[in-house]
Each structure stands twice: as structure tokens, then as C-alpha cells.
Image (cartoon, rainbow, N blue to C red; front, side):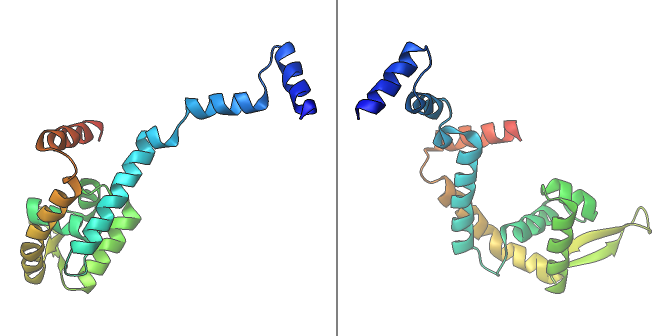
Amino acid sequence: MARASKQMSAASDEGTEPKAQVRRTRRKQYVLDNQIGFLLRKANQRHVNVFTAHMAENLTAQQFAVMAKLHEVGPSSQNSLGRQTAMDNSTINGVVARLMDRGLLDKVSSPDDRRMHLIDLTAEGQRTVARVLPMAAEISRMTLAPLSRSEQATLLRLLKQIT
């Protein structure tokens, strides 16, 4: 104990902070629980848990996003669909392939350029989207439930602003 006191005293005498003090100072400079990336990841994990627990039709969040976007905008090239749903090429390829295997999506020729194929919902895909859209709205409501209506609107506005 006396040795530790001498070391701390020596460190203070030399004008340097003891290691424990430096660590405490560093801890105060960067607190993980206050960082945007960490908080966004935790919020996303919460939403994914709600989504997984309540979404029917055995759809993942990415599969639902693709189907919802096609429902919203109509047939799209796979490249455009990837951009519109914030998925990289390999991810959108896999999602589209799995939905096609399930008979929910199909490739159709573009009316403007017969060389280009567009991704579209099949009749079964349209029926599936119609069934799950109300669930998706409820999932969004549950995710935002801890916030007041005003806070919800502010959060959505700010997230749109940074994305």
C-alpha cells in the first residue's frame, strides 16, 4: 500500500497523472452508451425483435422491405430495388432469389427496353403484401410506443435527415 502511495505521489510530482486517473478521464471522454452508432444498433435490435415476433408469412425484414417497396413503386430493376431498400448487390440478389423461389416475385420484361428485366410481385406476392401491411404498421407502432406522438414525429424526421 505504501508502495502504491509512493508511485502515485511520484507520478504527481513528475507532472503526470497516475494510470488510474488517466483511465477515468478516458472513460468520461467516450461513453459507449451515449454514442449514436451504439444507440441506433440497440434501437434496430429492438425493432428487429418486435418485427420477428409479429410478422407473419415467414418474412424477414429485408424480404418485407423488398415486397413493400415493389407494392409502393411497381416493377423495378433489381439494381434500383437494391438502392431503394438500402441493400447491397449481394444482399438484394439473395433476397430476390428467395422470394422468387417462394413464388412471391417474378422477373418481367421492361416495356421500355426488352433487354432489361424488372422485378415485380406475383399475384401471390400481392396477396401476401396485402395481408402483412397492417402487421407492419402495427410493428412500427409497437417499436415507437415508448415515445409520445411528438417524439415519434421528431425521431422519424431526424432519422430521415441523417439518412
